Length: 454
Image 1 (tube, rainbow, N blue to C red):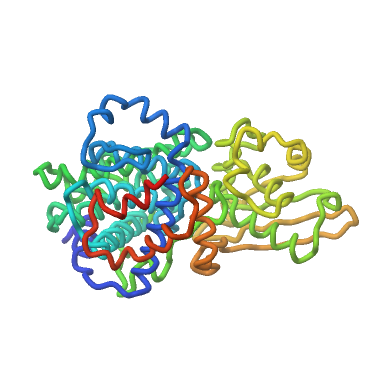
Image 2: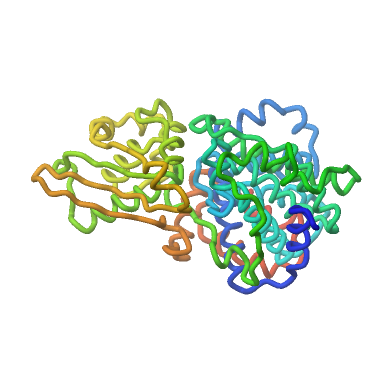
């Protein structure tokens, strides 16, 4: 009987044709992630990494850095993926419970080194392979794995991304299986680090691990093909109390990006806040709500969301991204959230701090969540005149069910360019959207000049 990793490897290598929908969504995810990399390139988490490894970076390498210059593929993946996740503006992928693209895109870019040429289409196919592998690994352990406290971006994301990198490097089924096996040995990342710079570092470590695992596998390193399901393997150690395993894992003709999609973030903060933010903004628009008329706001969310959002009184901008109270108060008072709302100066604004104590958050019970993959987040607004208003959101803006328009994607991309001190125009966005048509994509071509343009 084939092991789970062999089953995944066979699937991602045998899928050689992709629909236009799948390719377009992959392109959109890549472009969005590049925007997030640019925006996060000046973050302190990225600066700390470049200080920590200044000698290694100064020595150069063939893989380009979003901060300028180059490094080895391993360090490029580490730094670029940390940048992609630094501002928590990168996409979510529910089947893996991971920030899939923040790991995948920088890892794939890292092995697209100077002098190595591929096509834009092959790059996107490798992205889709890695995404499908992430979904398959996540199938057996989530949501139990995530709810137990593992940051699946760093665990599931690393294992799946190794498959994508291995495919881009031309691995056969055996090498691709070993790449995922080795990445399993690297997997770690506790959600207890949320609200610190270790959280975006998880994406960086996952991307580096994916690159290293794929390169090691192609160089002849070995690992168990049954490491997901065997005793003392991934499921046994990381699965949590309710993980179902992979007995029912199947692959549909339709790619997972077609059936489930990735969720492009509308707001630059933890995704656990997004549906509540959208629900509150819906209520504000529908009823013309004013701050002075509101007595109290309550957000009912999932158990894991409450655990993620551990900062009711955030002390810095990173904690603010994981504060339901700050995010809801700011979104309501300003009508939206942008990158500029998450700075030391902004989080101390008196009008926001005065509004925050009116906001409470509670979770569903374990019994309510049992056996249900996804429950809506519900916002209840208690008005001073006695009215009670409710709004439920099962899907956030940016999801397959509530997609962002091309214009909204461009606005976000340009906001990211400005935040990253790049030339803010739509030209780069339009050029990157032609990625699938690029015949000669390499680590030192126009593609990177668009990304690095200051």
